[in-house]
Amino acid sequence: MEKTVGMRIRECRVKMGITQEELAAMMCTKKSTISSYELGKNDVKVGILEEMAPLLGTTVSYLDGGESCGFSPEVMQIAMLLEGMQNVELRRVAMEQVKLLAGVSVN
Image 1 (cartoon, helix red, strand yellow):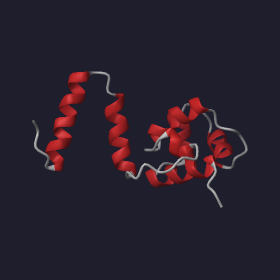
Image 2 (spheres, one colour):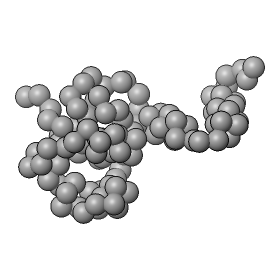
Image 3 (tube, helix red, strand yellow):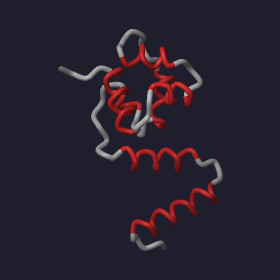
């Protein structure tokens, strides 16, 4: 059986250790809305998936039925946080820190 969008949302939410209530709060919506998405009762618009994907440590493509990107939720979360940094200098410094922690030479 192929996973539905709702099944993928639930899968990613559980992997991230987030409850429906917590996801609803992060998205400024109701728990019942998240539940209806997961149960396939409501179609999930692309704009909602775009807001939800970073919170779930995944991509819109994966949630919408594409293949997994192969990264762990933690790695995806770091990438999404870096992507969201508006200050370019702060992002550069954060990347240097990540490289140092990973044992990669900072050039």
